[in-house]
Each structure stands twice: as structure tokens, then as C-alpha cells.
Image (cartoon, rainbow, N blue to C red; front, side):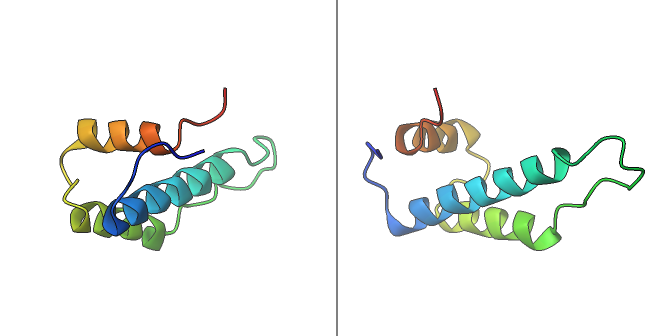
Length: 77
């Protein structure tokens, strides 16, 4: 359950980051012995996250972003 009140741009940044994170995990979770090259993360996923961070004023401020991310989405565990 989210505990922080986010602005629209902050929420967009968090959601874009989580989509990017899930995309990367899905790419890395492929079978290691499949003989196929690893799946590339679409550049659009990274671009979306970068644009959302910039719009929220969080670009280059990783500490603030990860505090915000953890407050809104503490993750499993």
C-alpha cells in the first residue's frame, strides 16, 4: 500500500522506473542455455524512464528518487 503522496510527475517517474526494472528482469530471466543471445531492453523503455525522471525534477538526484520509490513501493518482503 503506497504511503507517500506523490505528484503526478513523481508517480509517472516511479511507474516508468518499475516498468524498466521489470523489463530488465524479464530479459535477464531468460533461459541461460537456450543458445540465443540475451534479449535487449528496448531503448524506448529507458527513454521513458529518463524523460519521466527529468519531468519530475529527479534527474541526477538518485538519493531523493530512491527514497521516494521506497516510500511508495517498498517491494516484496
